[in-house]
Image 1 (spheres, helix red, strand yellow):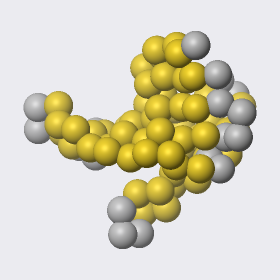
Image 2 (image 1 turned 180 degrees about the vertical axis):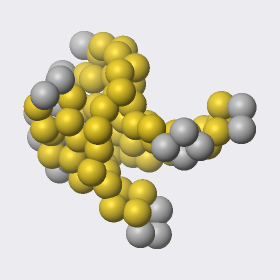
Image 3 (image 1 turned 90 degrees about the horizontal axis):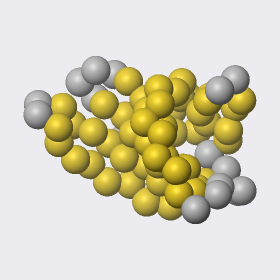
Image 4 (image 1 turned 30 degrees about the vertical axis):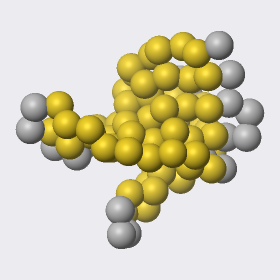
Length: 79
């Protein structure tokens, strides 16, 4: 079952030859990124949006990074 959220989150990421999320905080809980299963980019106006499908080992999450606004978002979760 998939749930659409579009909620702001805090992310620790490595910016070296691209972007690699390491863990994120949502609703007071920290989720480790054990695997990036897929990554892609899209455009919204002048903004480049980086999408990451990540897993913490229990669920699959779609997180995004807006490189213009410098903001992260949890787009959805599939448990």
